[in-house]
Length: 176
Image (cartoon, rainbow, N blue to C red; front, side):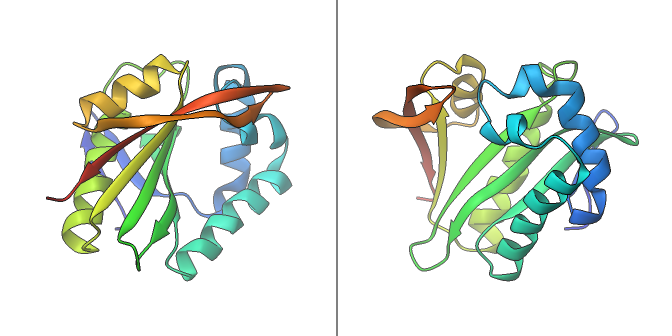
């Protein structure tokens, strides 16, 4: 997938290490909006940090265990999605997402995830797509619900964030 149209002038494209400066600038402009839910948004403070994070996903892509995508509207990076994990043996993957403060509420993340889910089931033959989000992240949980996912449970005190331990909800779709 080099580019997948999402409608309204938006596209889903691979977010590769050579785009590190663009990714770092996006994070810098959206840090306050992203950091409560995404620890990397607080840790990545320059192009070198962005490049290292993106390289980690380039390595996962080479190992067939994950991949990161950006959502662009025109030439502007406005968000992204990730196969955070992909386990071909078990047929399971986990999707993660983020969207800039000014771009939320337009359905871009939902449409990008629908594309990823379709690819995971139809092209890769996976059996299960998971979604994990802090139990207090209402927007993320609403996206999982819009995607038709089923809430399977809560991992209590499972995620360290800003000196606290957050509960994490697990949602999933299964191919059958």
